[in-house]
Image (tube, rainbow, N blue to C red; front, side, top):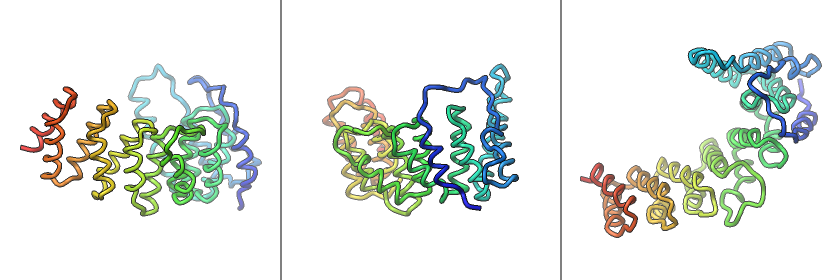
Length: 291
């Protein structure tokens, strides 16, 4: 059974009105999302009907144990469907494009199931959502992360100009932290080292600070290279006033440098430090790790 990709993309591209938001009291009719005339098997349609039913918001007055139980039921169901047949993915993608201005949790999980169980059919929709203005930013962010996972080479081709940019971003996109998180995922899936680009991200003052923090954290989990060593050292002594980035750099230096090198570097920086808060932090780090 072939999925009508043109119709699917047209439905996705038509989702331009983000002004209405569902309230917790709204209840989604799953049969509106996967009507009988969709080109999917009945058994796959039923799987998505059950998923949407499971994702319905609970009565907010219920005690926390009910919400906790619902969370674990939802998680198990979504993970099972993500490993399912591609027909389930087709049904999930159709349901996603039919769920305009509805509950974000439902849309996010439909997109995840569709992308992971029918990746070939999902790629065009994810690319359109991730890199084109006019869709809910929540949908675009989820699509960006999923696109990097299932189409890493294409993601890196499209995202590179934004990840390594040197100026102000002039296109509306998900926040930098998600571009960086997706870049790391794409590299992981494709077996490519993220170190060259993320070393650049870590020292790039044009990017949002938390994107730089994610880059530093990722660098600390990979083998040390001249690029990553230089980036970590640069962030440690950065003079732009972002103490959090400096603290993260110190932590990742301890994690990734040889112990003797990391302790010597931190002592040298402490001996010249002008910021009393950073000096106290470095002194505590040295006492705990470099005795």
